Amino acid sequence: MRPCSTCQKLYDTGTGICPDDGTPLGASDPLLGRVLDDKYRIDAVVGRGGMGAVYRARHLALERDVAIKLVRGDFVRDASRLERFKREALAIARLKHPRIVAIYDYGVAPEVGAYIVMEHLEGRSLNAEVKERKRIPIEQAIRWMRQVCQAVAVAHAAGVIHRDLKPHNIFLEATQDGPFVKVLDFGLAKLQRTSDEGVGSLTKSGTLVGSPPYMSPEQCEDLPLDAQSDIYSLGCVFYEMIAGRPPFVGNSPIDTLVKHMNEVPAPPSDYVPDVPPAVDAVLLKALAKHKKDRYESAGEFGQVLAGVEVGVDPER
Image 1: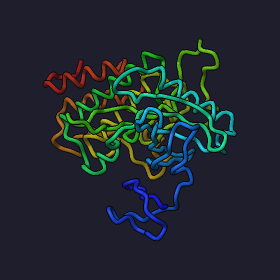
Image 2: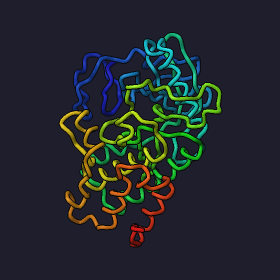
Image 3: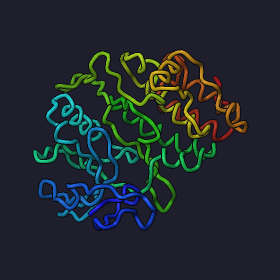
């Protein structure tokens, strides 16, 4: 069987192109159809990354679909990477909020690697939404960003800094009432509360983590991170939602990092003339170079956005 990376359907080996969407079919994933730890039947590939893949699976005993994030076996043999993966499970499990993806299970299967079992979501990422629509209408962008701020505020209150907030990690779950925003992937999260046994930074000096278009200046410099770094990243995401592009686009990842550290972003109204001055002001504050000049919390950022939504001037 060969999978379609777009619709996730399986076709026999004699088929080269998906008949539904025209996507070239790839080699079959050997895990498809297998039962993991006698509990989870692997049904489809949802996405792939450098360390592994995310699958849709079926919990056989409970008869419900779940999402399984699996780290490849060769990465599991790296103790630091396995520890980071465990901390992702810990980070998500300690967060209880409807706008944060729920975690159900964690384990290590010697034959395939380590895995996290999470709730299965139907819908698509904010990244896919922006790519298709080019930009999100301001009123809708504000509503969605306020919902993201709610989730991030809960994480910060629990001592968790996400460190990789970007459109790919914000999911628009399809519901009868419209998209329901959820924050995903705490794989780069740092647990601030170091009183827990074994909790601390796993990032080696000189090793940057994050995604360059959404990294704060202090993150680009490999400095200690706190809630204000996530607020900067949220500003980058919000900017892209309404302007159709991130605040900084360099010729290379390094060039983008340098721009974050040294350049003042253009107001989004430079790209989209109908962006009101109040929204420009909100974004430029969230994207301030110095942490002390940004919003003090994700909650404050969300409250200011609420004021913009009802026509209140956010400047103070």
